[in-house]
Every structure is written in structure tokens, then in C-alpha cells.
Image (cartoon, rainbow over all chains, first blue to last red; front, side, top):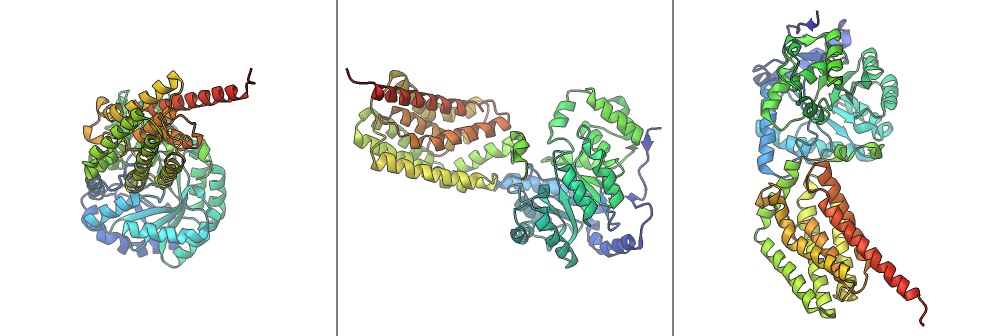
Amino acid sequence: MHLTTPERPVTDTPPNPTRRTLLAAIAAAPLLGPSAGWAQQARPVTRAIPSSGEAVPRVGLGSWITFNVGNDRAARDACAEVMRTFFQAGGRLIDSSPMYGSSQDVIGYGLKKLGRPAGLFAADKVWISGGAEGRAQMEASRRLWGVPRFDLMQVHNLLSWQAHLPTLFAMKAAGQLRYVGITTSHGRRHGDMAAIMASRPIDFVQLTYNLVDREAEQRLLPLARERGIAVIVNRPFRQGALLDRLARHPLPPWAAEIDCTSWAQFALKFIISHPDVTCAIPATTRVDHVRENLGAAGGRMPDPALRARMAAYVAQL
Amino acid sequence: MSEWWTYSLRDLLLFSPQTYYRLFELYNLEWWPLHLLALALGAAVLLLWRRGGERAGRGIAAILALCWLWVAWGFHWQRYAAINLAAGYFAWAFAVQALLVLWLGGVRGRLAPAPGSRLQQRAGLGLLLFALGLFPLMGPLLGRSWTQAEVFGMAPDPTALATLGVLLLAGERPLWLYPIPVAWCLVSGATLWAMDAPDAAVVPLAALLAVGLAVGSAWRHAGAASRPDR
């Protein structure tokens, strides 16, 4: 049997929740509550953040390239519609960075237009050399988003992480953000990331993992499980290149066994069904793709054997 | 970003092709009909080249400097910077080029048209005509909207190419005026290549042609100067 049935209720909880995680989950409940207006319309499968027990949907929304539309009003409105659809489908986590051009500003535009859905899980990054400038950059980012605080702040590509992490931990302790994380992409600096995961009390890591980039399975994902660190997966489609390649081939008939209707869902289900992955953050400019992506969080999920078959199938295409 | 050299050009691209070309569309809509003035200035460059002489060279330099300064502010600083973190640096580079053109061409008179080798003259004129007349048509001919046309004096690529054409037509060899236009042409070509644009090679190849001819001309002159009189 290659299938696993999605859990109902839809939240995965840690196998043995500690008192800390239960208390944190209770504390986080008011933050989730006001989102009901959005989330009640759809309930995608969620997974718990190990350090708190708080549930986040397994599919988030990235903003690399897609939300960098500058001052183009029509394109900004289109991005806002993507966000509206995302929240209506039950999405919560949006991720951005100062490195992404105008993306933060465009997210802020969308949030203002939508009345800032209270279920929003705002994830951003600090991307600057030197710790002194980090606070100013994070404050500028916060103003662009128009949020009172970020839920998650990550050190982008480990840039000046030694300087930024103490600042982030201090901000977390002061209630100025809720979670601390680090990121990498394209499979780079996994050794450094592993060292930080092993030695610092971070809540999140963000890394590249998909059907063809699977290095994280060897070291980082097991370490995340061991250390109780949530994992956000970027580049689930290799910036679209993976889907472009797969689009030349028909979806295998057995994809229906895990309720996949597209290659995008096939790719996403492979990622989010990994037991140590918390969520994936595909980016898109299209509302139909948002629905399709969030749809991947529902339905049946592949078990390890089927996941291996999925990867092998894509490798031989 | 660490290990930046290990990233491909596509990994470094911050925006989509749609956003990039829409940038030109919104820029053109904002400033129309300034394009007509820019084209008139381009025609004036041609007329001044036909007239020849030192004053014509100073006039050409003034026009080019104005165009570089405008592109620095109107395009790079006001528009491109919204989607490209490097555009602020591009703006400064274009402003520096404007000052260099003004100093070397307008004040020192080193852009005066003068006869050079036939190949260099033809290439220079060809490049100038291409930048002024054909370049704005290239996008529409490749299926993009007319509203996204890139016009000399308004957009960076045709402005850089026209400048390289003028440099080839100049009697002296103001080598200090080459690096920024050539560097821009390579940056622009890399951007288009990362976007899989079919015309990605056009601007870099044109720039490399200009550099090749300029270097060849400089060598010939250096060789002639070093030969002993008989």
C-alpha cells in the first residue's frame, strides 16, 4: 500500500507534545482565531511547528520574482488577487525578503487591500552584512509589509548569521517576533546550516528540496527532526524549470492514487509528504495555480515507498 | 550573498520577462510624447555628423550627455530601481558617462566627426542608424507591444549603441568613453539572456563589434606612429 490518508482533524501534532509545545499552542490560539473568516472557507492540511505546536498549512506562498512587479498598479492588483485566493483557500504563511526587489512592498499593498487577514503568518528575512544594520532593515521590512511584527524572521542565505542571530533571539525574547530561522537555497552551505541547527535554538530552517534536489534528505531533514526545527522548502519547482520539463510528459496514471491532477501537485505532494517538512512555499502570479498548489495539501499523501517511486519516475524522464 | 559566483544568471534574475517589458510600457506611457523630442535629438546627431567640424562634435556631445543623464534619472532611478536592486548603481554609471561625454566631447572637443577607416565609418554610421531607427522596431517585430518600444534617448540600450556609433565616427579615440556603454551592453545582454529573450545577443554583439573596431583602429595608429620616417 503506497498511500497515507490525510489526518482529520487536519493538523499533524508532534507525536509526544511536551508541556512547552502545548502551552505555546494555547498561547498562539488567539493569533489564529481571527483568521477564521478566511480559513473557514477551506481547511488545508497543516503541520505543527515543533518548537511551539502551532499549526501552519503545509503549502505557503513564496514571493521571489512573482511579486517583484515594481510600481505597476495592474500587476500589484493581480498579486493582491493571488493573496486573496491564497487566504480564501486556507493559506497563511507568506515568505519574502529584502532581496526580492519590490516584493515586500507589493505584499504590503495586498495586505492593506485585503484588510490584513489576521491568520497571516508573516515570514521575512534579514539580508545585510553586519548586525547593526540588521534591525534597521527588519524595521523597514516591517513597515513595507504593514504588520505589527513578523511571525518568523530568518537570516537570508546565512549572511552575517553570527551577527544577526543574537539580535533575532533578543527580539524573540522581547516579543518582537515569534520564531527565528535561517535559510539557504540551491543546496548551498548545508554544512554551515547543519552546524547552526546543531548549536543554536532556532525554530525554522528554509532550504531547497524537490523531486530532483534531494541532498537535504541526507543530513538536514533528519537533523531538523532530531532538533525539533520546522522546515520550509523553497524552490519546489526549481523556479518553474522542473514543471516546464515535466510538462512534456503525461502525468503517470498512478498519480491519481494520491489525488494529483497536475505535475505541480505531484511535485508538491512529494515535498510536503516528507515527515520532516513543515511546508513548501511555491510562488505564482496566477490564482488558478494558487488553488492548485493549496489543493496539493489535501487528499491522499504518498508513503515512503511511493515517494521513492515518484522520484525515480521523474529521474528517468 | 555568499558564493554568488556559483549562481547562474537565471538564479540572479529578480523579475519576470513580463515585469521587465511592462516596465518599458509604463515608462513610455508616462513620458509620451517626450520620445518625439528624443528622436528629434537623434536626428540632430545625424545632421551634426553630416555637417562635421569641431562645433558639430560639441553639439553631439551635449545631446548624448543629456540623453545619458535622462536615462540615468528617468529610467534607472525612477523606474528600473523598483524591480532591480542594482539599478541605482546603473543610474550612477550613466550619470558618470554623461559627465565624461560632456567633458571629453563638449569641453575637450574629442567627439568631432572626422574620416577614419572605411570599415569604421560604415560600422559607426550603421550602429547609429540601427540605434535610432531599427532598435525601437525590434521588440514589436519579435511580437512585443509597440508600447514597449525602446527609443534612443529614453531607453538605455539604444542610447548606449548610438553612443558607440558616434565614438566610431569620431576622429580622435576617446577610449574613456567606451567602458560604460560596453559594460551596459553586456549587462543588458545578460539580463535578456537570463529571460530567454530571442534578441539577447544583439546588443552585446554590437558593442563587441564597436570595441573590436576601436581597438583595431588604435593599434593601426600606434603602429603608424611608431614607424620611423623615411
